[in-house]
Length: 73
Image (cartoon, rainbow, N blue to C red):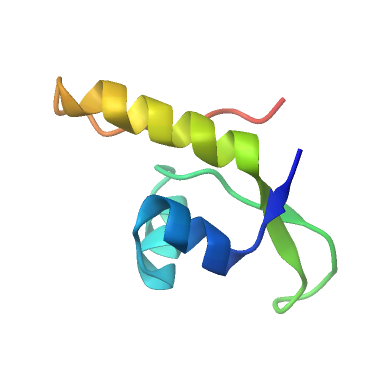
């Protein structure tokens, strides 16, 4: 498993950083794993979470139902 930073996540989903964080606040994008305390602590997303979110987004595109964030295990 690979861990992605915000720049890699944005590149994978073609969203800006602001869009990613806005969608997280709305519960429509997976929240990262926090590796350091505080507001500026290091965060990363497992690549499988982003791949799964993209898969769901593609599936939902046909029904025009936006995907929600997958539940973390």
